Each structure stands twice: as structure tokens, then as C-alpha cells.
Length: 269
Image 1 (cartoon, one colour):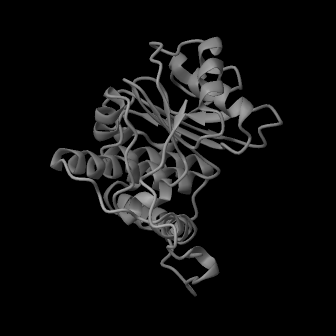
Image 2 (cartoon, rainbow, N blue to C red):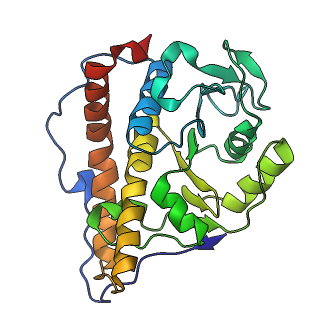
């Protein structure tokens, strides 16, 4: 695993705190409906599917049903449905070994990417995996995106690269090996493959997943220009990251779900 950050800014740049410590809204627009965990996960699939994060039949999101120290059961999408068509009733429940406990459909053996990561990472209640286009462009050459724009600051210090490509992860041993190489990183580009995003909530997982491909596209386009990007100082990246995640996560989620429900209310069924 290789860690990287954007080029360092001036050493005397001010440290900005950011986040809710500097400002918190009195009230924000609500979704308008209360979602079960199952419905929220179904919404996440469609939001990310429509954003270009998914590659047709590929990818999976898992979300723990309860405490990972209990039975480790988790929601996951079934094999064969595209993310854009998933509804709440389509989701399956698997145990910590990937065995289907509930659901009408089967689950890919690549579920072990998730089961083994959940097993060693109690902080990772949600694990997202797919192959967004510009992520995979950089994955093809084993390069992590530089932080070239303020929204990219939400990944400051969180990006990692797993360089070795081992083919399909289709059993627990391969999943455990990948989980060890991922370690405690929360945004991991898999060389010649795709990306894994982990988060404590479905809201944060969706927001960070929906934003990563644009961050990679910006970095890629800057690379094409053949010019070094302007530096964003570490102290400024720190504050911007807090503001984006602490203030932006729930606002992004609410807006994305409202928009989805206006178009596709059946996602909740």
C-alpha cells in the first residue's frame, strides 16, 4: 500500500479549523420522509448509479445491520441488478461469511471484499466498491489523484493505493489479504481495478463516493495540461476537509435523496 498527498503548501500557511466548530446552520432542508436503513441503502445505489460511479453490472455496497461485534449481518445488492434499478425490497442480507440469509436473489462471491474488511474494521460500517471511469484511468497507471481543487480536500490524508492486481477476489482468503493491505485507509484505489470507499454512515459513504470521480477527472485534466497545479496548503486542506464532511454530508444526502424521490419514488418499495 502506498500513501500520498497533494504537494505541500507554504510552511507558514495559516491553520484553518473549519467544520461545525466555525459555523453550523440553524436548520437545513429535510428529505421530507423518514427512511429505514434498507431504503437509505437503496437510495444510495441509485444516487451513485446515476452519478456515473458504477460500471453497468459491477460493484457492491454493504451496510452493517447492527453492531459488527454481534452476528456481522449486512445488507448488500444482489447479483444481476444494475445500481440504477435497485429498490429496497431487492436488497439481500448476508452473514459475515457471505451466506445469503434473506433475499430473492444470489450474491456475488466478490462479497468477500466486504465481509473481510468489515471483520477487521469496526469503523467501516459501510463499504462501497465500483469502477468509476476517471478513478480507473488513474488506477490503470497506479497514480493517486493530486488535490487540485477545494472539494478534493475531503480526501486529504485518506487516499491510498493498493498496487498489486490479483484478479477476481472470490473467496475469503483473498478478501482477507486485500483487507490487510487496505489497513485503516478510507479511500483506496485498486490498481487496474477500481476503488473502495469506507465510512461510518451511508450518508458520508455516498457523498465521498459521489465526489471522487470528479476529483480524479480534475487531477487527470491537470496532468494533461503538463503544468504543476497550484498548491493548497496543508492547514487550508485541513479546515476545508472538516467543513465538507461535517457540514456538507447531510446536506448533500438530503438533496440527492429529494431529487431521486421526485423522479423515482418506487426506490423505497
